[in-house]
Amino acid sequence: MLHFFIPEERRLPDHVTLEEGALMEPLSVGVHACKRAGVKIGSKVLILGAGPIGLVTLLVAKAMGASKVIITDIKQDKLDVAKKLGADEVYLTKREVSESENVKKIHELFGDDPDQTIDASGAQASIRLAILVTKSGGVIVLVGCGPPEVQVPLMNALVREVDIRGVFRYANDYGDALELLSSKKIDVKPLITHNYKIEDTVAAFAQTKAESGVIKLLGITTMACSDFPKSLNEFGYDFDADGKLKKLNTETGLLINEGFEFNVSENPQYNQKRYEALGEVINEYVYSLLEKEGLNRLPLPKQSTISDNKKSFIFASNDALENEKILILIHGSGVVRAGQWARRLIINDSLFTGTQIPYIRKAKDLGYGLFVLNTNDNFRLIKGKPSKIKGSGDPHEHLKTVWNDYIGPSNSKYVAIVAHSYGGECIAMDHVEEFKRKVFAVGLTDSVHIARSKGFEHVVKISKNWVCSDKPLDTPVLCPSGDIERVSAGHTVHEMSSSSCIDSLFRFIEDRYRSIHDTAKA
Image 1 (cartoon, rainbow, N blue to C red):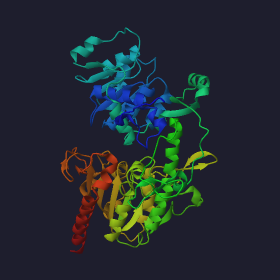
Image 2: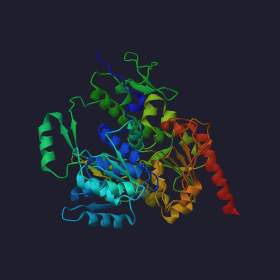
Image 3: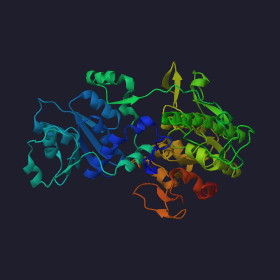
Image 4: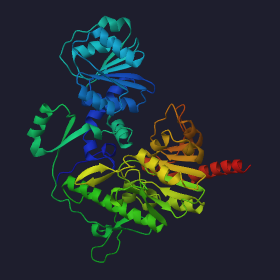
């Protein structure tokens, strides 16, 4: 039997799909290009060429903090995609427009000269434009591979001390690319425009040649074995008294001291699909645990003409609408659903580290009403095709609908929020005045939010972010100016941050509550 060893740092996390993983290679090129260019917070970046490499470079530049990213191309359909992906401005270059006019137009779009220009086309005209448009003392990175020799205004770059740097693929950038992908600071899914079976490869290339809208094609193989068990016991597992997933003895039906086994087949696709199917069973199991904790399902949106099976839902305690003290729990991105912090921990560690049950119990003991959000529940299959749920099409919309339908109209006066990973990005958005008036504390666990220049001040004042660190719990951690205070979560693993800092986080919330409540009474 042939065995493959994959280093831990190169394995895709549970919540990263194989389709997303297929884009790790071009994403690594974008990461390397932005590193070579020195992109940082506040950078003004020009990207020449809106093909796959140009588009992933756009995503990376924004994730690295660039304040303005403009992308150019000779095709408008590519620029339309770039705009949807977050380009601040796009510029259609035309052959009949002079070089000096292009420079002028781009400078007008920036309101200045770009700090860094990244050429992702390789064309001579593009390289010339890069030299002429970049600010004095700036950096040009050449990523696109063009002809072996080009004519460029080299003296222009020399006298203005413009650095010209080359890129050939990437070097030790896979880990950073995976971190951007797994933390959801970057979403590459919009780049996948078509999926084909391997046997349809010829047709795939024909479509690439014929259609202008094709960005990235993925070859996939089919699996005949898609019918998996629908319950834990049918899978041959159950949770023991310590919340750990254990195997069942097939003869006695009793638990044995063996955990989850991923590689049950020589077919890696089968193993992955089986794991994902078990994850769906875990979702329903955790929902049942929430109900055992006394929480109820509430439809989202609350009032709608659509049927309940096409809506999303959240969980809330019996007193959630009447209690003046409310706690909202928000998980991260990916495959997790209401009541979960990390599927990997639920399956491989325990229910008490991977679910929100400890938070729910502690909040109830402290007298809080509870809302448990389901921010990744965004689609329903309608006639075999995924359709966005009204009011829950993405995590931001989900939170907004929960607030408008339930929390806003409730009797709540003091609202605290706990959000993990990408859940922090939902909190970082600008909110209505009622949100700012009611929310008195936000506890984040290794949040991946981006600090805004506007509308973020209230969140900064009332929040603390427990981040992964090898330092003792609550040790201050270096924090960018204008961002939320950071302290150590007392653990180096991202998924474990919520579990490891629970006591400290609740002390923070209670201290904030006493301070706000006493001030209100006075």
